[in-house]
Image 1 (tube, helix red, strand yellow):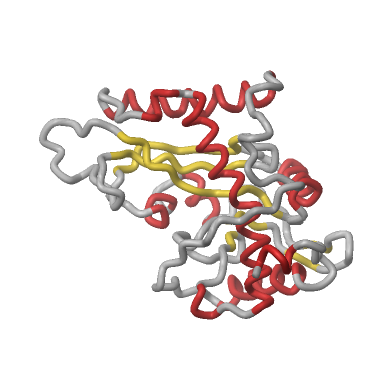
Image 2 (cartoon, helix red, strand yellow):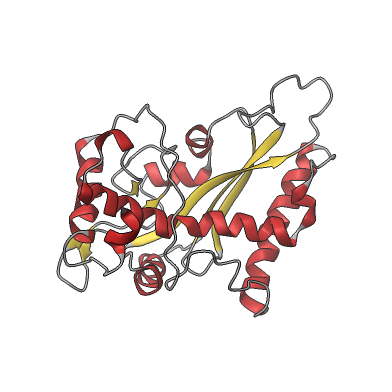
Length: 256
């Protein structure tokens, strides 16, 4: 994980160059890793998808590499609940990640530095997500498209790892502590191969890059999280930017 403000800014610049999303520090999501439940564990690991799992929570940069990951929370907990039990979230709340203060982008608009996630996560001044469908306007549809376009990186990372490491395609029949170690090892190998092996990720793996703007439908829950004013203002700042000087020519077509 980056340790200095300059390191975070470098990630933000890569998101701006590759995905037209300035000041983005990473795309966050959770993945259920299927396991054979330990004896006498009951429904402790049973998730809403109807199988036993532990959750891998991870964040990817603009180049499909994992910035941080934590694994081991039982599958019964939702993504929004899992992240609140991570060291990452603890540091985010205590403001000890070294995240830069808000500052102007190239056009002069002042934007905060933020992580992005889907609708399962709570809205924060440093963590934004799409609007729910109940409150969509044309401008918010464009904002949702721009957020989801960059957020798909972490989903693609999970898909790439599952296709390359076949153990992720079947329930793992090992003690949970060993499952955790295997998953962390796979994450480390993913980063190594992404850096050292030019053929590890093919163009087909990157289902949505800067030249391919297809968007899958958002799955938005009906119950929205309560968010404070500062968090809402952060999201509104990006909404205004994406509909103004930060607009890209194709966004209206794909947002609608």
